[in-house]
Length: 259
Ligand code: F6R
Image (cartoon, rainbow, N blue to C red; front, side, top):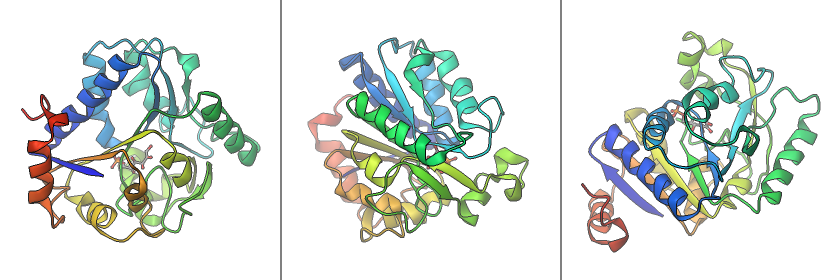
């Protein structure tokens, strides 16, 4: 795992967008794993402004609320169309979001896993982190080998996402279909972005704590190619910040990304 700390949320989002852009340019048929949420909005704004060629790319989103139709403004399908797909030249038929309205959620989860396999896996998976340490909607106690399935959301997550539902946590759906931790770990590269003080505690547990199903993001420690990009606030509870900065300032891989 590499931890990159940028001075503010904007420069952290810029670094993530530049990394995604580099991967798309290097592999025009990149298979992208995508996340939703407020943290990613800035990344998608930046990517849209870069006028990259996504015409050969395919994408798989991490999750979708159960019981929210795709056309509903609260669905993650709607979010993706608004923040990214409607602003870039990706073919809609190449984009995938789990169907939270499927009558048989188990069959939908199996279909989603099959689609990812048929695409020969995800090259680059974008991730955010929840205040309870989730990645995707893998809430505490999600098996570290879990696959796509329905999950009940924690009170913490429903509170975190309440702003999108008029500030009312009770209006946030109770369940979501989400890629499992095991599904996420199979992506060839992982890129997590976290900004703001509200993420500092869960982020520190994920990066410097023990690997535990109580903090799904701690499973990222198992992945051989995982980058965690933070602003100073999200990094504030980490104990080894000087070392992470030293690595970023000295590894040749980061030349051109430091300014
Ligand atoms: C969203 C997702 C979640 C979010 C996380 C952070 O598709 O999978 O894990 O990435 O909850 O959300 P924000 O960015 O809104 O704080």
